[in-house]
Image 1 (cartoon, rainbow, N blue to C red):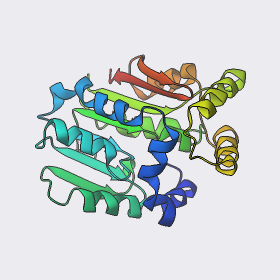
Image 2: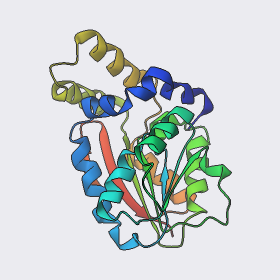
Image 3: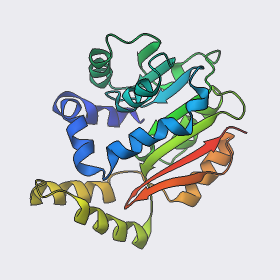
Length: 224
């Protein structure tokens, strides 16, 4: 994540993150609960959760196997602290305040997740750098799961309109307009073709999309 975006997840934004994702991402909990089944065959080996935030996906993995060895990493100290508070009783869990590039190359993982991170990273070489940083820390043929905002042009605008219909009634009009405008104009979303280009360059196979709802999509790939 770009350093200028870390501030988005401090103070009140960090405290309200869990409520925000459930409000703004249709079927969010369903998706989180589904992801562990895709990589449960790796549950005896270390998993890398990139941009782990408050630990929502970690919670889903631990429900499947409380002994799953997991490293969660996030550049926001406040988000990491919330995750530490949430999982204070868990073993086989390491939570790190930092970025993937700071992890030792000797740290090798059997799977990785990258959920709701890429759209905060500029496509100026930074997205590719992040994907490469993940790739070099994975075993060959290890899976990577990505969940993100994606799309471009007219199609993205149309999907954003669909998202607006899905939002619950308790999202007031001012918040809707502000956040929908920010999603369209301030985030660094890319289309699926570009995502596959970056993954291929970073050493991954072509993706398989297993979920889409309006502007949100999820894919699984493997390190070549």
